[in-house]
Length: 236
Image (cartoon, rainbow, N blue to C red):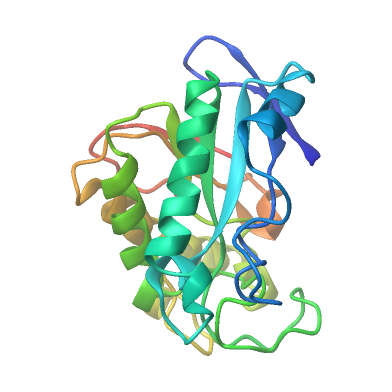
């Protein structure tokens, strides 16, 4: 587990957290599980010895939606229920949870993703795909909308600027997706699409949006901030 962040949210408390990785890759790489290692109460108690109060859980689009022929033992309802059970355990331990859309579909052959050129959710893409990411967030938000201590990180470390050299256009792509994303080999879901998907099921949960350059660039984040009926978006 890696130290994730130390920041202040508008809830009036300082957040210290860890990233509990595994559910973004285990179900699609060797397809032998959902998480990489234990996710039981004992493992949570061990994490709490670090004086944390928040845990980020990266997720896989394909496994949640049961698409693209991954092992059914670790996708669809089996995947969802495993994630739900872990979130419930975290919440029973009075920990806030961030659910993060980490790996998504879309063919990408440019720089930034290593040696993975798979169109399915087997690696990090520059932006979420419109075909399935909106379905993912509508489903996730529906399951967790009754718990406001579950936060939605709508897409892990965007980097549309690796595809679009013009910085202004890259920010437009980040927000709007679709035709605002020239050069992409798949239809992009902009952050506005993802916010809309969360709100479409009645969720008022806080959402997090990372900026450009793998979330390192927030220079125009406020300028291109998506509209939100709940006014409940934070930068990540």
